[in-house]
Amino acid sequence: MTGHPSTDEALLDDTLAILDDLIAFPSVALTPNVDLVAWVVDRLDGVASDIRLSHDPTGTKANLFATIGPLVDGGVMLAGHSDVVPVDPADWATPPFTATRIEDRIYGRGTADMKGFVACVLALAPTFAAADLKRPIHIALTFDEEDGFHGAPVLIDSLADAPQPAAAIVGEPTGLQVVGAHKGCYEYTTTVTGMDGHSARPSEAVSAIHHATRWIDGLLGLAGELAARAPADSRFEPAHTTTNVGTISGGMARCTVAGECAFEWEMRPVQGSDAGFVKARMAEVEAGLAVEMRTVYPEAAIETEIVCEIDGLEWDDASPAIDLMRSLLGGDPPVGVVAYGTEAGLYQAAGIPSVVWGPGDIGVAHRPDEYVEVSDLASCLTILDRLPDLLTDNG
Ligand SMILES: [Zn+2]
Image (cartoon, rainbow, N blue to C red; front, side, top):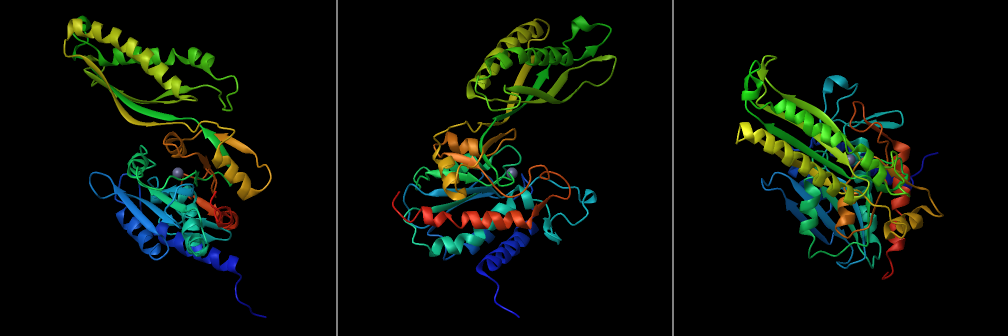
């Protein structure tokens, strides 16, 4: 007996076809993504009531903000990033930029993080458009999330005169578990400039490495105070703000006083005030070191470049975004916290209550042989398909 595929099967087929196309764009962070965005704009032609693009200064990277339904406040934003982390094809069993189905998994870079979610949203877009929406569904797609979160702030700036969403779902891979909070992610590169010289006469030079280690020692020395500052009701593990120095480089040879030293470090604040605390304390440490260094070499310097300062997603029991997930999922789903950063913190800080929820496992993201389960995509479709029912009144 043969029959027509059910609507659900047709929707899943559409999603898989869209995912094929999305994976084929090698949209590695910090490389152009305008081709991918143009492709999405084409797909939304006749579906979206408004599409606004915002670009980086080079014009080679774009954010997309599309609205389906009326151009009014109070809608829901489905948010993703268009970029992926780099690959080394030698580590992959399948070509990373070809979506490859093996049994019930789709392999390819970005399948989990997070083109699978984007494919679900784009496949549903015509369904959303056909509904009698009184409040809109927005699709947000950013560039360069994976390397410094450069796109989302540009997108947020571009929305000043756009309809204000009442809530956002950021579709990072959570295995379809609702995530209501994550730590912030603040990343820096600090460069210490001293004066090189012969190691036999260290007092006539200024070792950048020696001063860098003292700066780092100051940072690591804050651990106890940061632990003590953790909110009593912190949901994170560990409960407090952490710091890490991840790389360090400098110097030329064992017998040379190092003229320069640079190190990359981060902190993951559980609350915004901790970032201010760390910065204030490190400014004191730095001022002391600079005075010492400049008595020998007036041009000595310690400079810190901000790579990114991504706000955490702060827990809010009364968040409209968590209410939205309760309505979509039914009942009282568990709401968790995660240790990785997402754009949800930026959206929340911009006044859009946000949760993180999407198909795929974060454990396979950023790794060779990244995949998403077809069953996760199917569940994602089933749940997002309920969204129009929540938006057919005036809120
Ligand atoms: Zn991601």
